[in-house]
Length: 109
Image (cartoon, rainbow, N blue to C red; front, side, top):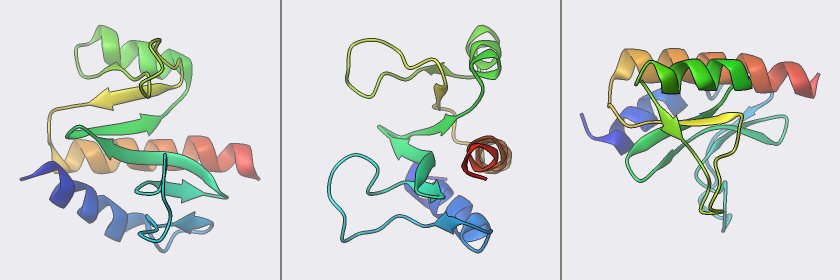
């Protein structure tokens, strides 16, 4: 499955959750193609990888397990609560996006 198609499936699964807004094709710039909750980004695709916001300890664990890579958003240094998962796996992407939704959504309440 192609990354964009896999992310489309994630968007479809999460778009009706409380506070979630799907990618907005009328927006420009960073986050225009991201899932948000309460206005905060929690999942997007960058360079064919799923990028999600999770607790820093969870991000470190995914990186140490070889399941993800640091994400720096082009700023030169990794962001501690963001991880990029390159392996396209619909079940894993859905689970990670769910986890990110819960993490970011809990901060918006």
